Structure formats: structure tokens, C-alpha cells
Image 1 (spheres, rainbow, N blue to C red):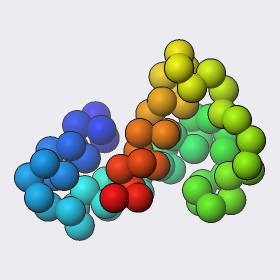
Image 2 (cartoon, one colour):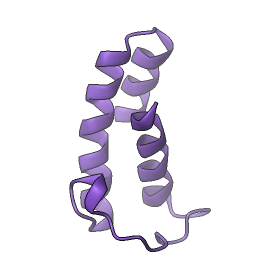
Image 3 (cartoon, rainbow, N blue to C red):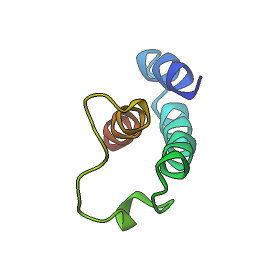
Length: 68
């Protein structure tokens, strides 16, 4: 659901709202993967199965969106 909210705001050019949603989604994704809540504290190692693991794909998608 957070991804849908993010896309809705992003493509509607409401970038501040999109970024707020992305922050919330990063916390959800980090918790699901057992990662630190702050993306800067995530260790420099491969995440589990980035091509097939939905949690990993979600986290990476949100991280990419947050960077924009």
C-alpha cells in the first residue's frame, strides 16, 4: 500500500509527500529484512535474493525512490 501512495504522490508532482511516504516505507522494509532502521547504517553486504525476494525488492525500490 505504501508503494501505491508513494507513486500517487510522486507522479502527481507532490514530492514532499512522496518523500514522507518513502521514509515510512523504508522503516517497514528495514523491519521486514531485519536491517537497521536508518538506511545509512545498513551494512555494505548483499541483501537476500534481490531478484526473487519481495521484501528485498520492496526495500530497494523504496530506497531508490527516496533518493530522488
